[in-house]
Length: 251
Ligand code: HPA
Image 1 (cartoon, rainbow, N blue to C red):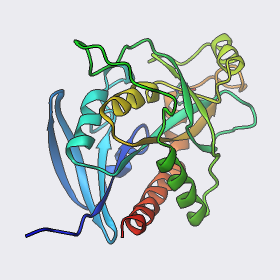
Image 2 (tube, rainbow, N blue to C red):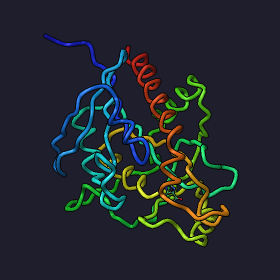
Image 3 (cartoon, protein in one colour):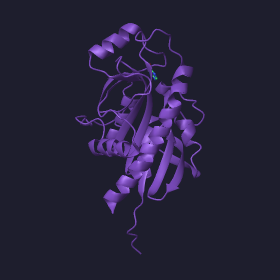
């Protein structure tokens, strides 16, 4: 029998503050067996398709940014045949006009992690990065946000650092001078893993704090987690709306 019904399927990668929300979505836990190890996730069914929740830092936020299984997350999405992956990321702002609470869809990145993430260790493959984030998925996210009444900036350059420490004030000034809008520790590595394997990938960056030196107070992880609470809900709303839009495109 040929099954003509193909459900829309979106993966959401929950980073700081969103992973814990994803763990509570109704649905069932799954384990995806990848070349890079088991990836735990959760599938939740909705009227217009399925959301696959993946946890960047593993359940309970255990993995630091330099130990995240980026290649495993990307392959898990490929094996599950997702239509696209919406990643969420807590970020510091490199610009004073983007305060805590600002949300933006990433359009490019500067990679200062020097992690050399690749699935092509033993053969020569040079992947095109003219569009580091998926253009059509970015547009779908912007449309979904507008339907949901969520203000989302349509352009952001993400600067990736290796961490796990936060930046110095001089680094923040330099990153801004180089053209960065936001700074975090994960997205370039993740975007590389997804691009190399060919799964459409976008990132919603959520500003939790002004970059070091731009604010009067020192920076703490607790501040970052606290600021994520409301914005994490926005990511879920946008992702569910994306499912509706993708389903409509498919039918
Ligand atoms: N720097 C790096 N990563 C971050 C920050 C920051 O200021 N805020 C949230 N994640």
